[in-house]
Image (cartoon, rainbow, N blue to C red; front, side):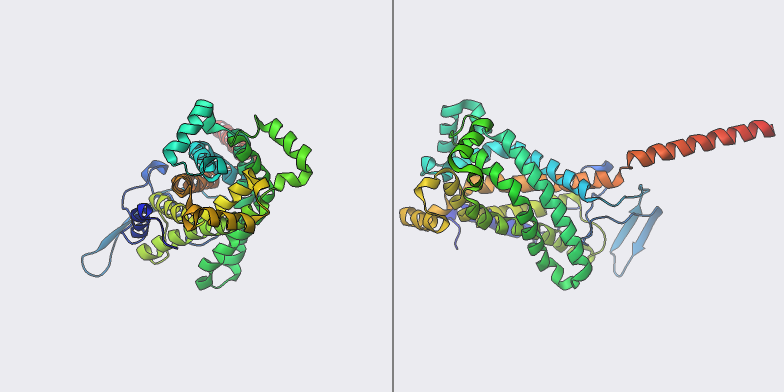
Length: 380
């Protein structure tokens, strides 16, 4: 499948990113120190030790300065921690890029057929002003946030299980299956939210309550899963590629730079997320387009195959990539935002001390201080 000419430079740039030397700039956050994710798929990150600066010299003139700083003990993350991190990161990405998603949805519907980015944005502005670019936002961030919670908690659990049982050379390929399974677990929440969001974006419902009432009245409970075939066919490969490429590119950076040992920088996490989002967004655009048609123009089609056939008959292969520019423009920055945000939240959680334990430690410290002061008074 050959990308349209106007998008070829974009994908060439993405391909080159994987072969340029990783940036040596100190990543932002954590007081200028490298923010990290282990090459191992394990959930928790090993605690670093406190060492002085050591000049480690190898052959030739190359030298590496290994500096370790005092760090707090990292606590293992629970499934609830991972769910919270996944939900928050997903909601941040959704809120920041929802206007682009509105443009993409209009382009892929029958109402927006033939409209370019500017044309679709102009129509949304004319119909609803600034608010038109945020139609369905509240519903979507709640539904997608819930789906993100389930997806990441499931993905991390399966990934850890796989890393403990699958030979190392097969772990990279197995990650794609882990991601697909994680999406299937989250789809029960995601599909109804996606349906309501898109009907609100297209002006088919004035609000959340109206959308829910209309779907329930016309189709019952099954109506909330309209277009589920398209969603599954789009999002199973999408999630498998998104998370699978992301983790594999991070591991590629790590192995090339330090033979699989050490830590990836936050800059490398952002690059990995952007590469993953750009490739995944474009490759899965035909599936996303058919899913959108089934959700917002479902009455015109007899199912996924019928929608695919009619789309091809109306516009050929190029019709399957309509809205592809907006989709890549949404997915690439979305992944570059929400996946690194997820990593940041996990690191903050690992460095946090549970409140109950902190209070207990403070109480013990206070009691010990009082006992010591009393002993000194008695001694004096």
